[in-house]
Length: 329
Image 1 (tube, rainbow, N blue to C red):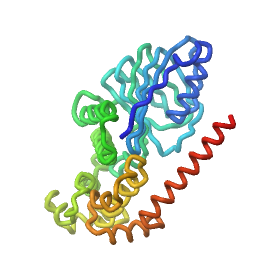
Image 2 (cartoon, helix red, strand yellow; image 1 turned 45 degrees about the vertical axis):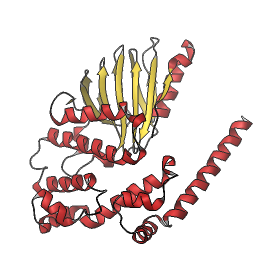
Image 3 (cartoon, rainbow, N blue to C red; image 1 turned 45 degrees about the horizontal axis):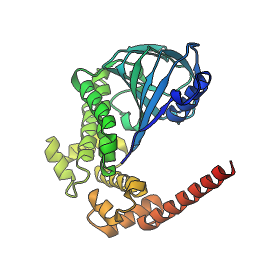
Image 4 (cartoon, rainbow, N blue to C red; image 1 turned 180 degrees about the vertical axis):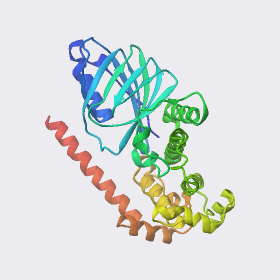
């Protein structure tokens, strides 16, 4: 279970708030901003992580900033939901003005400028590119575009992202990956709808996305199988295999890979330390502890119990060094 944390420029003296803003933006959003405006301003950030997604609600008075650098890996994308006020984004020769109820996606790159109106409130999500990329569209062509949070799939995505943030303190860690998958899927559907390119949206590409979506939604079901997917999607197993060829992995292997990833993430989650590893494996569709242990070792290099102990020892060592350094300072 994650909990929201709050940081505000009110913690700094007025003369120090510009520097405070830059340091906080760098730490939370992974950017190195140059604040262009000279007017005094206040800002606050409420932030928390949910699985692979970082959430941050930003409230600020009017300001303009230019992005001069990025500390995060370039494979992360930023999703911005405009709650109040307005924000203007300029990037890659494209520009979008977000009003309340609208949202957009952009990359973390140099050369971006952002203009924020007074009293602005935005919900920012930092999400790995791989979560929302698809072979059914060209993601780079869909950044800095306007999406409506009031109609269609865009509305479903908007409402779910906002609800996930509002309930983040009440969510069980076991549901994190499911929620991340749902957010990612709704964003992909919005982008697919926006792309409007029938040539790119091939029948097999669309089916492949449906297969993945069905697998993610039923990953915990130990009875999940090719026969079940074929029946649910009303097509033959042969056509499923054909549609999935471009992934370079069989559907069965994809299922087990995804299950191992979910188990790996939960085993490393500090909130899951009290959970028995076998229970974690069974909750993600495994029905044999021996099979799980063997598959986990092949994938991650060590049996799950030893892997967890080694990670706990490593984190204890890191925390110990941090405490020593803090004491010295």
